Image (cartoon, chains in turn blue, cyan):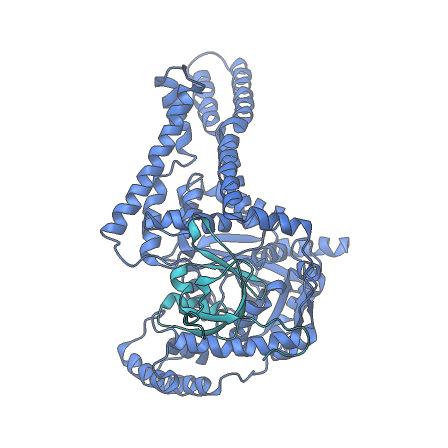
Length: 529
Length: 91
């Protein structure tokens, strides 16, 4: 095993600039462990950029599987091919090869949570219809086992038209050798057999695709199906709209097409689930009972306030010790360099300018790192989604939804990833209001400036049990929050007036943070600040 | 004979722990259609877990997944108490 890893590394350095044999889209439900799988398959051979025109991260990595090297695209998580948010739209656009500068994937790696097969099967059914070489990585099989769930992998493969299914555990790496072997053969894997679910839709879509092909437009029949079902999600030429409207009337009558699709597909999902999965007798562990208790409104609120207090305590008190140590080291280093150089302008430039200057920035690194670390860990454990659920009611009073809480908390670290985090908010007005409110939150880069000004202008004096300097800093944070809330309120009452945002959120199970995922995200975000 | 007619039960009228099956859905609201894509369709069984601070939003468990929605959407789903199946097939 060790020798194999070594070969992979040496091959990697040779082939890093060579073309990959193909592009594989890594696609799956949110929180299914897709990024952990992607990280494990590509290691640090990945690059992050933005898709053109949107603030959705594009992560592409090179994976080497035996003799085959593949480019893997980590698509944003999605529940279906009907996009409701900016990141879901990107996932679907990449699958259909509609994104400039991103190659159309030639094969699919579907990452599905074994404990949530019900929703996973819905997406799988749609993916199978794309008729691309495809394999399924079934994650969280350890959690499924603990819940007593039994899954018949062969029956699942059969139901999916022959798509091979590989049970894995993304956190420990169990099942990855077999998955990697399969990825090495993926491009030669025959596409899934057609699974006839909905003949009328298929016939209609193929008829339209054929008619448009004569007119010079080449669309995948599944793409035409999406145009038929998700009228609001894509723009099509008016001439095509007439064709679509006629077919839509035939297929769905007056019912909303998406509702009809959901009913039909979930009918298949339930039949398949009954065949594939044996539900376990759920034995509630003590841990589950504890989680259940702290999910109740009041314990959850107390926990939320405590964890926020802990974050700020860590940023302002604990980071200070580290910052002081770094500061002392830099001063020492400067003094040492000063003794090496002759007195004069050069000495002063190096010691007081370069070293002290760079040093005064580095001193704040611990604060920024700790803040990012907390927010990334809260995100990775699923706690941020719980926080969104908790405060949705309160956020509604300022015209936002609980989903805005994730970006708003992130913007205490840095407004840039915070604005990127708004991509999961489906409602456009809600999203813009959140984007405009986020920069009011005091970000970590503003902290040094505040600290400097407070140090210079606010006397060290105690007000009751509080320190005046600390109170002023706290006040500045409060002003920032009020500014953000005020902006959101103002916008929702004027330029962004509209119906109340909805709140639909899948709440992930609480899980231990994955060290590799946290580390890669932390690296990414530090680079951005 | 009881004079009070039993009211129509929706996802918004449940107590924590209640298990129900979705009977009919008012599908006009696009947010309701999104919930249907997440699996809240006729025939699906759910357990109501809890409501959040202030009574809204609500959290449900549906075949192993947790999902939260507001009462405004929950009211669009008519449900009936789910039959607990000991042995054999439901219905």
